[in-house]
Image (cartoon, rainbow, N blue to C red; front, side, top):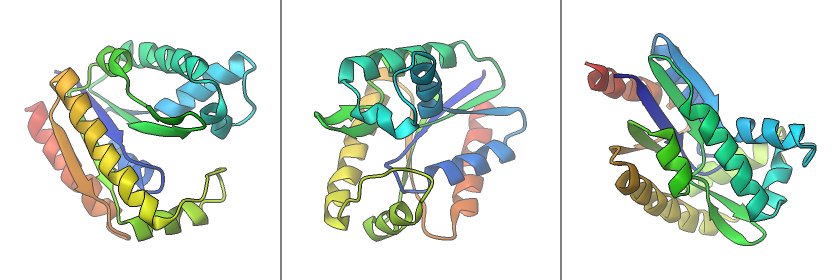
Length: 190
């Protein structure tokens, strides 16, 4: 059975670093960034110039981009497809699900993994990331985002029947987290 692992986390938890470690530890694994697929579709439609503009778009356009990305992922073949994405996006209209029903069902995940970090680590990582146009958020509001992520994870697991796993990504321990996930996914393949 092919693995289709959806790895999620709020911006700044170090999710992408962990995902890259998982992909390098799983022979034949393919990494897919959901937001990149959405950006490529939005750019081809001439809706945006940079990826961070997507969350400022009307939700209906964002939904269309999500469906396009999910459809593309659903068609991917391989031993393991690792999807790097978010459970929700902070928009001008409020928190909006990154994996609404039709999207998460279309991807057919075999596993859901939530990467977490402390609010202080997240705030530090966000402010240090000069490659993105992130909104600054106080560590106190990050506690709310972390709790919201767990709620969205539970709903996604319920909708798909995929098991969920929550991992803590402490500063400097991304390699350990990735190796633990590789070990867990290796057991799932056997």
